[in-house]
Length: 134
Image (cartoon, rainbow, N blue to C red; front, side, top):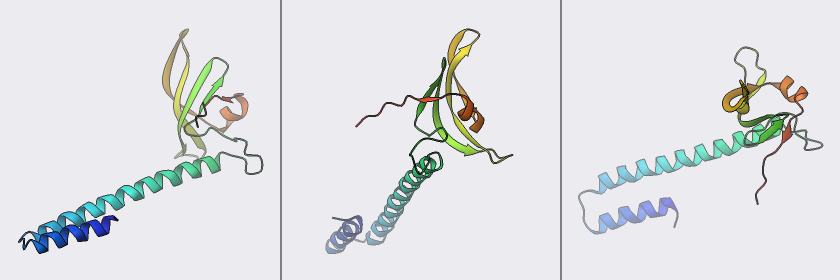
């Protein structure tokens, strides 16, 4: 049963029972329906953003990555990088990969927040080490 059918069924049950709370029930159900729609829109927006990020960081002809991709992990030498998001710089518009870098700091490896740019991708010899699960 769809959400709209469920809502109408509940309202009809209240009517059949002769309840004086019909208006309250309708208001509650309208609010609930609005929240369900908002959740569905947010989920759709997140899926669209992920697809757009993949498209913007992948060569169309070969499928080869042209930049870091959100949700992927990379290694370069002794450094590891986990990309969480791609965003343009507010000053230059150049895209940045935002995430976490695991690298030596005073000879001790630590995770720290980090941003990488297209030059880092081009010259960093990064290898995608994301584990694929099916």
